[in-house]
Amino acid sequence: MKIGIILGSIREGRNNESVAKWVKKVADSYTTEVDFELVDLKDYPLPLFDEASSPAYTSDLKAKDQQAPWAAKMDELDGYIFITPEYNHGISSALKNALDYVYHELTDKAAGIVSYGSSGGVRAAEQLRTVLSEFQVAHVRTHPALSLFHDFNQDGFNPGQAQKDAVETMLYQLSYWAPAMNDVREKKAQEA
Image (cartoon, rainbow, N blue to C red; front, side):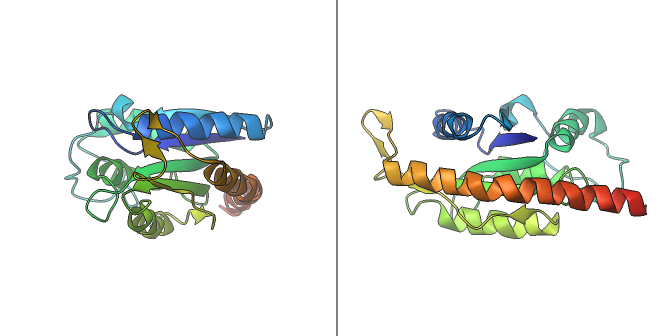
């Protein structure tokens, strides 16, 4: 089982990277039965989505050469943990743009969400849940929400035990949902 930890911000000086690395460290300590991989949107530069049709309906994209590595990476993963900041009550434009470039690669997979922001990034997480639902992604209930005022300080990112516990609960839920969604994909493939 391979779970991608998706870094949902590309901005300079982002907190996203420290949060993602911490989640990976917690995840690697939580289980050795899953391979967790950091997937950084910075490594998959995509133009602003302006395709004539959604990847849900066509693979004939103008930006196919740029989209292909991102789509292949998302396809090879069995599930995801999205690390999302909250920008103006929503997910980052980079994350939304990247998600617009895929569809079938995410269908019938499972995901967890870790958010951060002045209010824990909860509005971004809710927006991301809506977007993921369009892909038929089963997103788990537990959602660690990190506060810029309590989980970050002058020394940087410094989450407490309650946040680690929340990540572990999310991982517990994901450990059941991801294999279950794999069964769904296999059954659908047999029917096709």
